[in-house]
Length: 226
Image (cartoon, rainbow, N blue to C red; front, side, top):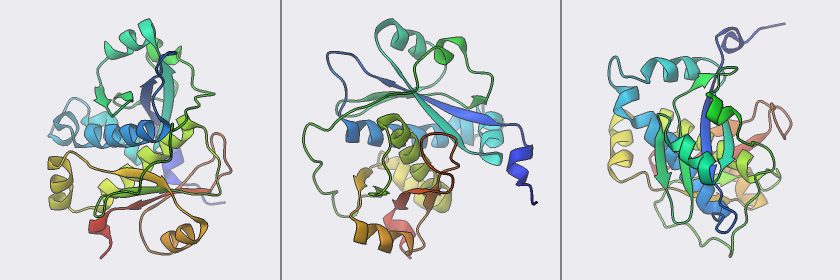
């Protein structure tokens, strides 16, 4: 049996925390888009990209192994404790997501490890409008049901795959524009075409919720449609 070298490397996870206050939970689509943008902002941060950057080694180790992301939820004092840890907070229309540099799989900071991960469910008050023409879209598989937390992680994966597939100049243009993106669910016909298009596809490792190898997201960035 062939062993994937990524499994032999030390394993890291990228923590994301979404703020969910009882009285004002964020809209689902906005939470997914904010999580995706958070991953891009961390990946493009000088603490990652600069030689000897504070987070560069952790990100390099994380990307050399299985690229795992876990979304937890917080409110009130939990959120304030999370904000005190090194990371980046990203604010959407209704969502707040904080992303942290990768940590060892079994080495979560105490204030993050105690947060709930399962059962993160959110809803959209109304159906999202069609994405603006020319905006990068992270297309969700219409045949795979995911909790909001799982979908946030998958959207983050899709954004990261798009980032890695772009040239340095294309990454710079996207970053300078503020990382515009949309997350939408494809129709079955659209999904079939997207997965055959050559665009980056997220295939889940099957650690949680869904079957290993399931295709969950296609990253449709205009610059990748060459």
